[in-house]
Image (cartoon, rainbow, N blue to C red):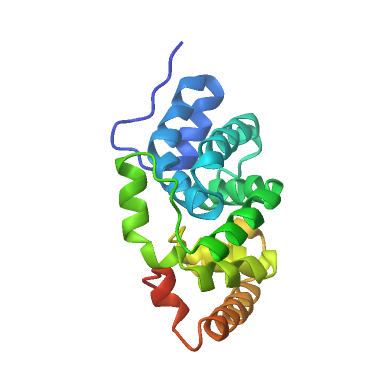
Length: 197
C-alpha cells in the first residue's frame, strides 16, 4: 500500500511519519531542503565536499527518521544539525579551505551557474581576512555564526539544531561577531557575511 502526504501538507513531521510506511515520501524532504543544505555546506567546505556532505546528511536522516520527534513540525533545524555534524566530521577540509582562502583571497573553484551565483552573492565572504578569521574561531562559535549567516536559521532554530540553550547561541554569536569584527579591522561582520537578521 502506498501512502502519500496530502498535496497541501507542509508539515515535515507528517512527511517523515508517512516515510515510515512509504520510504519514497522521504524524497519530499530532499526536494524541500537539499538546495539550502548544499548552499550552506558549499560555503563551509567548498564544492568538492558539499555534495557528499548533503548526500550523507540525507542518508543519516533517512536512517534515523523513526527517531525524529514528531512533535516538531519543522525538520529544517534537525537537518541543519545533521549537516553541521557531517561538516564537523570533515573539519580538516573546512580548516584547509579557510587557510587556502586566507592565502589566496579568492575562490577559483567555480563549476557551474549555481556556483557562480553563490560566489557572486557572497563575494565578500571569501575575502582573505574573513576566511582567516573564520578559521580561527572555535568550532561552536563558528557553527552558530554560520548557521545564522549562511544557513539563514533563527536563533531558536540554531539552539534546536545544535541542542544548546538560546542564551548559549546569543553568547557564542556575540563572541564570534566580536572576533570577526576585530579581525576585519572594525567592519561589521553581519554585512560581510550577508546576514539579514
